[in-house]
Structure formats: C-alpha cells, structure tokens
Length: 366
Ligand code: ADP
Ligand code: MG
Image (tube, rainbow, N blue to C red; front, side, top):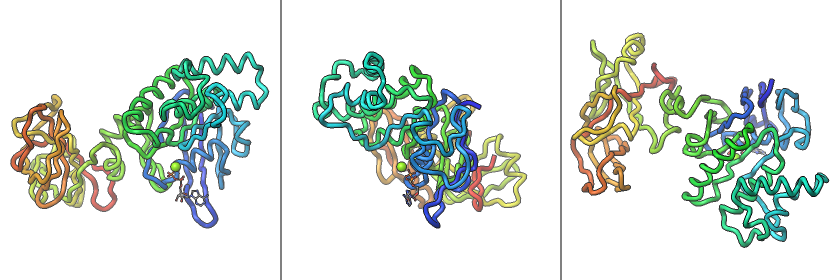
C-alpha cells in the first residue's frame, strides 16, 4: 500500500493517554490537514509519523513500508516546524542546503536542488542574504525550502504559519497549495486554524482529545458535520446552537424566540425519533436582511426576530452580535458598502440550511 497509514496507534506519557487507538490513512499525493483545538494531540501524531516520538503501540506504514520503529532518517519524510530556527550566520542558500551537505550530497546536485526549491519559493534573488535581512514571510519560506530540497516522499507541517501576521498567512496558504500542486507529494499539515484547513486541504481530519471526529473534504465537513463539535469548529463565525423542540404534522423547530419550518430532508429523521428535544444549529451566514438576498435554488426564507446588540461593519457584510429569545447568537448579514448600522427587528433565515443535533449525544440528525 502506498501513502501513509497509522494503525491503532496509541501514545501515553506515563499514565496519561493522549492518543487513544488512532487509525488514519493518507493517500499518496494527498494534502491532508489535521485540525483541532490546542492540546488535542496533533503535534504528537505528526511527531510519531516523523519518528521523533515513539508510539506506545500500533503500527505506522509509509509508502508500504513498516516504519514503526525506523529512525526519522529512514522514513523519507521532511518536516517543517512551527518554530523554525534558521542558522543566523548562514545565508539562505547555506541554510537550505545544510542537511544535504551534511549527508554528503555531491556539490552539483546540492546547487541544482537549491536552485529548483528557491525558484519555487521565489527566493532566488535572496540566496546570498542572511536571515536577519529577510522578512518574516521570507524566513518562513526558507524553512520550507530546507524541507523541499530534500524531496521527501511525505512532507509534514506543524503549524508553520502561526507566527506570521494575518495577511502573510493568507499569502502563504496560497503558496503552499501551489507548492503541493508542483511537488505532487503527500503532505500532512497540522493546525488549530479551521480556515487553514478549509482553504488548503483535499481532506480534513478533525480531532478532539486524540479522537478523530470526522474525516472529509472541506465541503463535506462544512455541509454535513457529523456532530455538534465539528459543526461548531468548522465555519467562522461559529454555528449558533440553540435548544429547541420539534413538533407538528409538518414538522417545525421551535425554541425561545423562534419558530422555523424544517426542510423536507429532515422530515423523516425527526419523525423517526422518540424525543422531540433537539439542538438546532444556525450558521451566521445563513441569516439575511428582511428584504431578502442571496440564497441557492433550494433556499426558503423564514422570518426571525433579532435583538441586535452590536453591528460590526466589515465592508461587504455586517457581523451582528444579537439575541434570539434572550440567547446570544451571531449573524453575518450581506449588505451594500454604504449600509447604515443594522438594527433590531425582522431578519430572514434560510431554513434549507438548518442543522439538527441530538441533545444527549450531540450527533447530527439527518
Ligand atoms: P496539539 O499539538 O494538538 O496542541 P500535542 O500533541 O502537543 O497537542 O499534545 C497533546 C497532549 O499531550 C497535551 O495534553 C499535552 O499536554 C500532552 N503532551 C505532549 N507532550 C508531552 C510530554 N512530552 N509529556 C507529557 N505530556 C505531553
Ligand atoms: Mg501542536
């Protein structure tokens, strides 16, 4: 089998288990992002793949080879860390080629590989510069370049962008996606930032406390989250969760301050349930101004009263901190750039986008 496989991998530090049995499989050439809150075990997982941390049990295969007990050097992987330390006394070319030179790679080949990597990362004109004469983004690219010159089977990234400012992060996301296209290598990227996961991944692995909650494409995890955790974690601002009850011949979902018709796709599922208690999930971006707006061909708009506390102007939209029946929610309302601050009153919700969850298990009702 090609790609990377983790089979029932566990990790404990003394008596503390941080990774319960974990099964993961990455296809060759795939860009996978492991995303989850801080402390959920992302770095530990990556370090076990890299061989920097021994597994407590289980097996790891890379490119069909059992590497569970292989040393990092023998795994054909390259890793980029969050805190990349460049050698300050070496220039960019020397920093990038350090590992190759250490391994005794012929000089010609070293030069060739550095040239290719530098071109790819747009660092060619900086090869003679020392790290102190580079911007943060350029330094980060040098750290990537150190990994790329190795041309490994699998690249591992541990939150490599988290030290950069927002604008640069967004540029680097695009560059990384391009880099993946050019290199066509398996890449496993770890982050706590769901935007990075959504924008870069072919597939996203959502992790909580060492457990995989869902694996799927960005569209799958956004459109069909399997539980409240995933629903709340993917999407920005976060999905609003309100306690509610389902009732009626033609089922509706009602709670404090709202009463919305359920879309057809949920009718069967709610009629099969014993309990009428649910949690309803309303994404901020599915609210709109009362004068209507946007939506897909399936959209069905129903009115809902919002008690607006704060309206934040961000140009194309306004972010509302509001209340429904006394419960805090957020809404993102698309409006023209000249719009006045939005006020309390009637808004619309696209009921084709309603999510329901079991109040006890947190699992999606679908
Ligand atoms: P993440 O990268 O998702 O933020 P980590 O993989 O770094 O999470 O850590 C997962 C858990 O393992 C955390 O609770 C952390 O405190 C614990 N942990 C990590 N490294 C060690 C260690 N060397 N000794 C003990 N506990 C550790
Ligand atoms: Mg980490």
